[in-house]
Structures are given as structure tokens and as C-alpha cells.
Length: 119
Image (cartoon, rainbow, N blue to C red; front, top):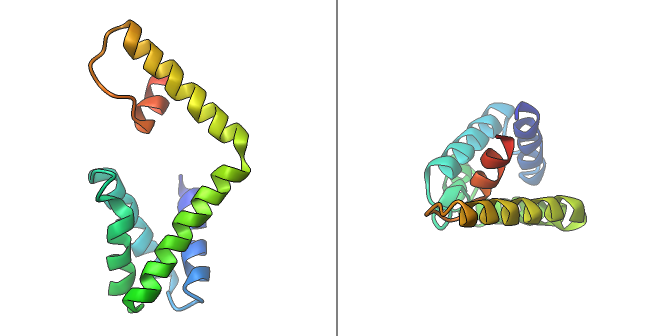
């Protein structure tokens, strides 16, 4: 997880064309991760990440472009790795089937896919 966050810091530093310091990059990524974890996906960390990048001195338009570029790069990574997508799809289906057969009453979320499969 630490390596992933360091990768995010490097990516946001590159996308901001070195306008952000390492400390600012760390702060943005930690706030972004926290917001993503505690808010619903419709509001989510991505919409508030624009605010976090803007608060570090990057104009709003450029902040939006940086955040959208990071989202695009995430999607591009998943598109280039079909085995990852296949595993996620199979995992969600198997979890959904398990919930159906055990008559659980909740929806399969990506977080559920990972936590249930670990058991």
C-alpha cells in the first residue's frame, strides 16, 4: 500500500510539472485516499481531489485536468490488463453467487469482493 501511494505521489508530481513538492503531493494523496474511503462513490475522493490540488496553489482548471488525467491513467491501466479485469469480474460474480445462495441482503461492492474472497 505504501508503494502504491508513493506511485500516486510520483504521478501527481509529474502531472503538475513539478509544481508540487513531495510534502504537498503526500498531503494531497492522503486526503484523496481518506476522502475516497469515507464518502460514497458518487461524491467520492475524485471530486474533492480537485479542491485539494487547488488548495496547494494549482489553478482550478489545471487541478481538474490533473485529477481527470489520473483517473484516465487508472482506467487505461485496467484496460491494458484484461487478466485483472477478468479476475475482478469473476470475483464479483462468485461473491454475488455466494450472497445469493446464502441469501445475504446486500449488494456486491468491490470492497466486498476482496474481503469475502480472503476468508
